[in-house]
Amino acid sequence: MIGSYKLKKILIVLLALVVLVESVVLIGKKGGSGSYVIDVTLNMSFDGMEKTISGSIGTAISDAIAGIRAGELKKDSIKNMVTGLIHSDFIVNTVMSMSYPLLYQTLTELGMLDFATFMDLYATGPLLATKLEGKPYTCVDKDGTRKPLTEVLNNVGDDWTYMDTKVSYEDEDGETRETTLWNSIQWGVKDEDSFYTAMNDMGEGLRGVLEVAMQGKERVINVNVLDVLLKFDKIPFNMDAATIYHASGQSGYELCLVPLFNSLGLEEGDYPAVSEFNGYTNVGDMWKAIFGPVGKLAEKIENAPVNMLTNMLVNFANLVETGKFKEYMEHLRLDAEYNKLAALVMGFHDGLLFNLGDALIEIIEETGLNLSGNFNDLLDSFVKVLTKKEGDMPDMDVSGLMACATEKTLGNGATVYEADADKVIEFMVNYLMDDQIVAAIVNATSLAGTPEGEAIIAGVEKSEEGLQQLVNALLPLLLKKLDAAA
Image 1 (cartoon, rainbow, N blue to C red):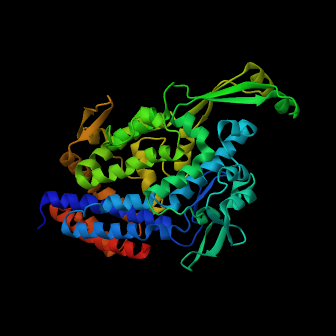
Image 2: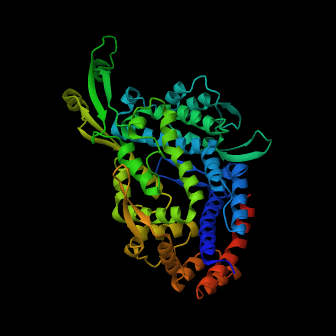
């Protein structure tokens, strides 16, 4: 009989991997639309991700499975899996496909597209192409041929839906692929350095947003009044029409990302200091400060999976339940103060210009996850996203979960929760092993009526023996999903 503590550890890792693989299978599955509509004009596609989950990521998953069989994780398996997914062309393309259509739409709705380049915002294809001149990046165009990325961006014009076009083409291995133009962009990402080089170049057209919303910097829009009003640029008559700034006097990094890092289990030294981040002039350094701590988090999970995962669960539940997650995200904002003449002539008003955090939450919620309600609302939506079926989960006693942890003050003064791992596991097992909950989960999935499903439901009636039965039922299912995703 496997020992109780080791069994709990195996169970946590196994369940985490089931969620991971389920997500990979859903994202990478061939056929269907393969895209999630963010809003009317923003479309993010996950077609063609199968190649992204190959190589080092597939090896890392295999290592993790081998670790489960041995009762422990192999060193660096989670870290390799996480960094292998992050350091990829796919992530560069995903960030790009979310950012530029949203940037264009926002500037158009604000009536500020004509002034955007004064803020280092290059919101159309041709404008972004000017920032990428001379770079080696390529992209498949509508005719199915691979061209310099700048050439395709010039064809985009101001209609980013051009990039949503699906094409078939032969990749570098001679395999035929069908995906969107977005995901056909080749940035040459092979490691950490090439990833941040690509993120730097791709993000140059977003510099203004990153500097104001993330770094708290101030940007002044200086325009030729005669050109703006009369389209007459022969005589220079310039004035400072607007100041774009962060109303808090601080930075979005300090007010949003650092608290989120802390809640995930990262402390000072695990991520760049606020003063360091706010002083960056290279866009790639900003992206590294955002993505880099994820690798550090994976390391920490690997070294202490039970403690880290239970801490993360408690703190994330607290963030959602109290509304702090949305509160932190709303600190990613841009505010504006206009010259009185500019305000009078152009109809602008001082105050909030754009809230990037709200926009990002809306994007996430378009995938089906509910971040605007309480933690139980999020759980319900998460199950619906995974199972593609309606049905509410019985409510979790969130206050009971929080009672399994105590408050802890970090060196920077931030307050987080430190979980009592055994209490949290006992709480979660009691919650998940409830007949109604298990039946609801199983019957909402493809396990309904299968031997695996029956074994899981039957297992809840027994304590440690039930957990053993759960492991035995889920492991073959996990291996089948891995085979299907390969």
